[in-house]
Amino acid sequence: MVITEEKILEILENVSDPEIPYLSIADMGILRGAKLVGDVVVVTVTPTYSGCPAMYEIRKRIVEELKDNGVEKVKVETVLSPAWTTDWMNDKAKEKLKKSGIAPPGKTDEFSIENILNKTDSVACPFCDSDNTEMRAEFSATACKSLYFCNNCDQPFEHFKCH
Amino acid sequence: MTYTDEKLKDAVREYTLRLADDRMILSHRLSELCGHGPILEEDIATTNTALDLLGQAKLYYEKAAELTNENTSADDLVFFRNEREYTNVQLVEQDNGDFAFTTFRQLLFDVYDILLYSELINSKDEGLKAIAQKAIKETKYHLRHSHDWMLKLGGGTEESNRRLKDAVDWFWNYSGELFYSDEVDELLIKEGIAPDMSKKRDEYYKTVNKILVESELDEMDPEVWMHSGGRNGRHSEYLGHTLATMQYLPRSMPDAKW
Image 1: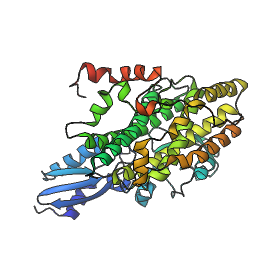
Image 2 (image 1 turned 135 degrees about the vertical axis):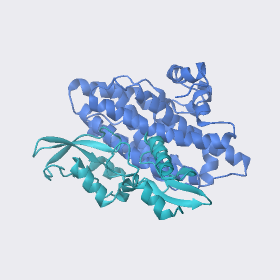
Image 3 (image 1 turned 45 degrees about the horizontal axis):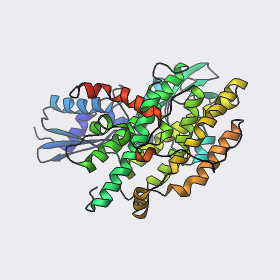
Image 4 (image 1 turned 90 degrees about the vertical axis):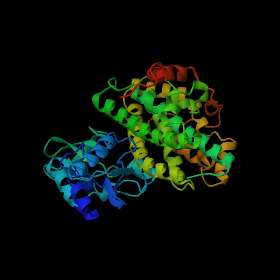
């Protein structure tokens, strides 16, 4: 089999995010690219957060998935720049998040101390679409999510932070 | 990034280690609250903050290890340096105390961190620049979180306000060291690698004082005597105990692996 870069990316569509298994690392924007260098497949990934504990598992899954598809020589490189942002998450991914009860991230806003101290994201409830929601905790089950409560349907829910 | 000038290389290494040590020690302090947070949400919040800081520290240590020599790893720098070799500011090594203490220590660090990263994202050192661009986004949540708790504790009950005031009194004289500067900083400022934080000092104290007033506390005077010494390896009694806990396992079993 002659392996092409398109084929590699197609295979990597099967690699899921360990913490959100119904999203692939491509959906998440963690997968930054793949190329052939001689006979070695070089896959580039970027961590969501600096201390993301899933990176080890993600690298392992990439190597395993490619091996299962007959690609033996794999190198996974981690890059920091440009820094990961939820703006890279595709619409399909955001729709899947919402369906599973997690409010998807909106657009990231301008960075300033004023914005940080005075602004909270207005987040629509993933169950009833109401804007009558409030944040209960800045951090939730994972660093990339915060905990909200919907005052309309009385349901707690998680919000994937704009990052 | 490779440096041919040895003096500059050493300065970048020293500067990178300081960034790493601040975050490593604060991360360790916060991680002590794992399973001991006042409520479940705060248990999760403080440990998430600890995880971000640990991730950032790891990136800085890897860079510092590379600048040391090819036989040095990030783990060597964390686990096999003694108290006098650690260069963190004394603020981050202080005891967790009660939750008001943990909150105010974090606020003092978070405001500084935002101001630092707002400049370090333009560093001429590509490695530091990339780490800063990543870390600044995480610091945003840390500051929101510590700010939120300042308002809750300060405006809460008489007791929570009093405890927060005690925390302010205890930590205030540790804030000045964040703006300590020596020949390492001077050289890197000249080279466009490190920001000149002395220019950010006014904005820092203005922001912190504004938050103190919002939290129903008195403004504090920045022009008072401040602790120093951490950057040169002189620490308060707390660091040695912290390192003893943190370094025990790899020192007693140096080849231990997960």
